[in-house]
Image (cartoon, rainbow, N blue to C red; front, top):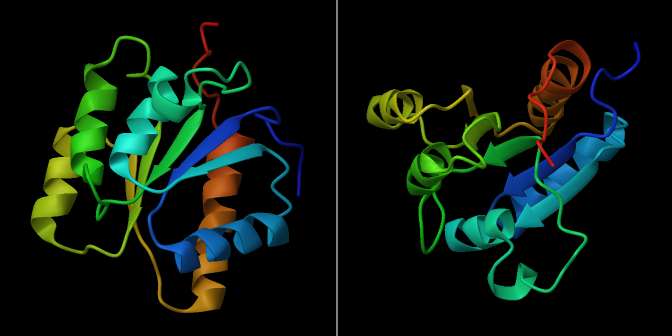
Length: 152
C-alpha cells in the first residue's frame, strides 16, 4: 500500500441502516482508513451536517466533507434528493459523491448520474465483497485522485 494522497480527507457517510453503518466502520478499520469519518442517518440530517444547521449549528468542529458516500434509500429525504441539493449548492457542488446502495434499478443509476454522482456502486451482500468495495473506494478516492480543495 502506498501513501494516501488525501490523508486528511473528511468522509461523510449517509446511511440509515445501523447494520450497514457498522459494516462500513469495520471495513474502514480493516482497510486502515485513518481519515475522519462522520456518519449521519438520513437525508435531512446530511443536509443539516453540510450546512451546519439543526444539531450541527453550534459545533465548530464540523468539517466540510471531501468525499460523501450516499445511500439512495433514506428516510425524510432520499439520496437522490440529497444529491440534487448538493449539486445545486455553490459551497458543496464540487464534493465527490459516491452512491453506495442496494438499489440496482436502471432508473436510479440513470438519475444519479444525471444529477452529478461521481460514481454508483452496488452494495454487495457478501461481507468480503463489501470490504473489497470499501478498499477500492479507499484506493481510488483517498490514494489516487486529487480531491477538490475545500475552499475554507
